[in-house]
Amino acid sequence: ELERYGDFNFKIEATPMTILVFIKDMVLKSKITEYSSSRGISISYQSNWENFKEVLNSASVSKIILDINLLGDDNLAGKLSWILENAPKVEIIGFCSHINKELFEIAQETGLKTVLPRSKFFTNLETWIN
Image (cartoon, rainbow, N blue to C red):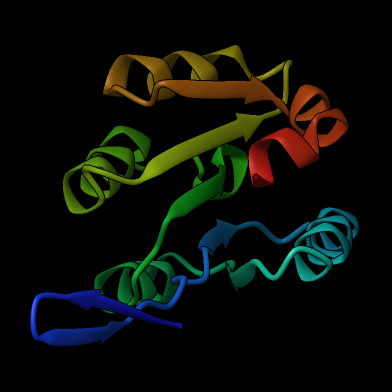
């Protein structure tokens, strides 16, 4: 569809939503894929930190979903800070095991606004993908 502005015509196209997902869990991957594919949402799955950083630096990402357990204890605050600095306008949703309170606290203290127990993320998956 063309939009007219003065003497100019513009073609307006919707930009597809791309979500960068840092997980290894195959069940969760299949649920995310099932839900997102029916809604035209593009997903980039990464489970390696270096690959994740490369994709974040090179792609247009509208949302990030992080398995904080997969980021691990080794320099977690540094990794989260790097993500927040390199994706300042991107919605970031982190989740981790409810029994690992230390990771949960580090994520919140680093500035991650949405940190959920894994079970709550999984049960409300549609909310977090939209």
